[in-house]
Image (cartoon, helix red, strand yellow):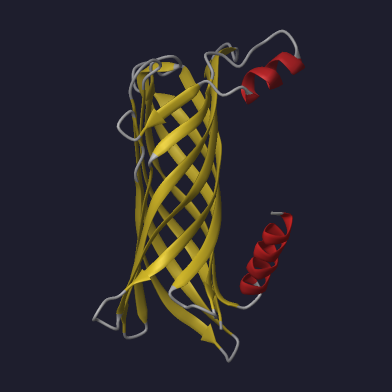
Length: 259
């Protein structure tokens, strides 16, 4: 068994070292609307900022298969719809890996890939009253979620258009009622203990985005493209506490195609 695992990791390392790679770095800004029955029951809206990195590697040994990973750091400044003196802050980190299979399409200018992966997403929320500055409530959560993934791109002259769609199939993780416990170790123990399991029918969380890129430099080894991306994220979580989220954002970034 150990020998088989060693062979598997060696083959994986060899394949990963012999790939065509696409790297992408974006910064974004958008609008967020959020409602949480335990922290922000009246609903809040505000500005959402993101910084994300995305990479996909195509195996030279089999170009129909590719492997990738991504990370996104987000921060939101939320202001209540109903109370002008009530604000909230949200920060979160999403990290994921995925595998894709190229689907045969007759149109050579259009490529379609389908597959799945594993997502770790986390978030922490604080709400406070502006005049007093005192924290009113806090909430934290993290999830491990296998997800389905679709990716497609279409080339038109020097422009490249791309879309991505992902959605968790199920979610396993932790949701807190409060972040405040007497000691640091109680906080850590509390946060690391899973207490939530939900299928996509209970925690519906699709993410969709489209992008357009244009080359700004190119040589024999690398091509750089300037990219504009629009993203849409929705979350509907039933049960208690219930949760609703909608994010619309625009991202500006660079794409590096390593040949």
